Length: 101
Image 1 (cartoon, one colour):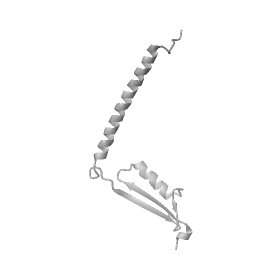
Image 2: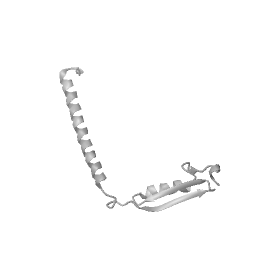
Image 3: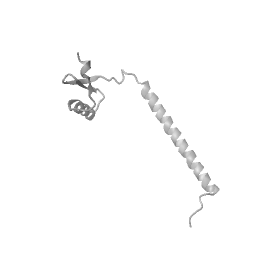
Image 4: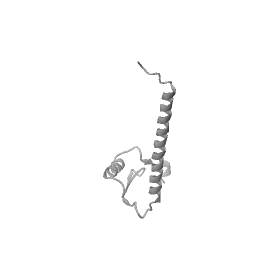
C-alpha cells in the first residue's frame, strides 16, 4: 500500500534533505573559493607562460590567420591550433580590398 507523502514526517524529511544539500553546496563553494583565491595568489614568476611558437599565415595578401602556442599548451592543443591555422579555416581575418593600398 503506498504511503501518503503529504504528512508532517515527509515534510521533515524534505526539510532535512534540503538543509543537508544546502550545507554540502556551501562547503563545495567554500572549497572552490579557497582554490580560486590560491590560484590568484600565484605570481607569473612561479608559473611563467612563454610563447613557444607563433605562426602567421597570410594568403593572397588578404587573409590572415595566426596561431600562438604557449608553454602551457598541451600537445593536442598545439596540434589543433596548427591544424586550424594551416587549413582554410573560417576563423581567418579577411582584409577588405579597399583597405589595401
